Image 1 (spheres, rainbow over the protein chains, first blue to last red):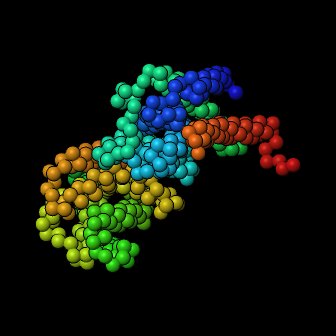
Image 2 (cartoon, chains in turn orange, red, blue):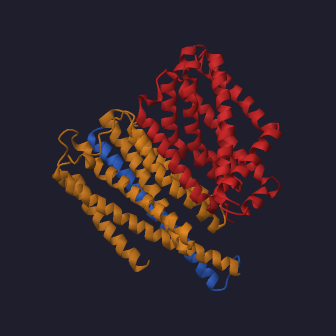
Image 3 (cartoon, rainbow over the protein chains, first blue to last red):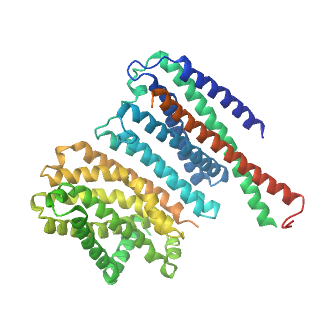
Length: 220
Length: 225
Length: 48
């Protein structure tokens, strides 16, 4: 493994352990929701990391369309894949958190629905990439989805906000979150972001190897 | 060729094809009639149910026929390698995009009007009071749908799995357009004016505009080969 | 299910997802590398 990968991997591992301890042991239970609220330390960092990942997809997609160099496309593809993983975590932790607090696993709550739409958009992105053989063409097509997808993320959020929502307004937005909960949340967020960087580095390594294999095959 | 002239040329060509070919609009209309009948059987004999769900059902029917219309817009280009010719069009490819979008909107809005009329007839909806306000809502919703749809129809036209991939890519992306559009339809059908909830109208206008601009900017990359 | 049951379920599934994804990345990298090595040693296309 390359040095960057090892450093990021070790860093992510240490931070995840610290985050787990803070979230599960050190943080006090929530005044209203009790212990179950500890799922927040998983749910909130994972969606914020997914937003970060899809923002990277947007930037790299634009970069690829403007510059046309493979590096941008590889980064966009890698970030989309990792973003989908984090979105999946957001979805099922949301469902698991929803059961004891709202009484149901799934509800057509605005934010939950928005996240599900997001998940489908980027799943479509990955599917599109997998059916187009030619990498340059796949990159161009995917870049279009990556750019539209980002705006879609914002628009879906805006549109569903108007519907009545069960969801507690984001604690971060309200600024009502207690400091005793804030530190564990931030540590977990940092852990997730470093984990994202680690996965990204590994995924880029894989993409580079893929292209090497392809180049070799063409050369033979 | 100048951008608008190119768009007008593409539009004229598409509408002429639409007018001359039998299978296009006719099949769409037949399909729409079928859908309206299906709603009746799916929802049971009580008309109240259908009337209550009318805005949602209408947009559901629009999406189904729209998907078909979108796919068709580029299928006619695939025949005889017309796509290749489109790519070589002199001037701004964004003009081709604009022409395709306007053409797609014309076909889709025509189908939508037919569906609305059939809906009104079969389910005894009093459409006259809503009519004038319904048309702008239909147009605004359709513009957003077609702005994204044209882009993805162009992308999937080359692919083997296009029948599956087009709805898969398009449907999640058009949700923000469909939400305000169906909500406004509900308002209008209830006899309210468009200004009753102006934020929905604003939202829809902004979405339409952004998706049109994004489509215009990215379309040349889709056509490039 | 008590609150810790839900917490365990959430953290457990998240752990499986993350470790699983990391593992799948590792396997895919390993496979590509092995293929490149094999080809580099000149045994392309040889079925043993």
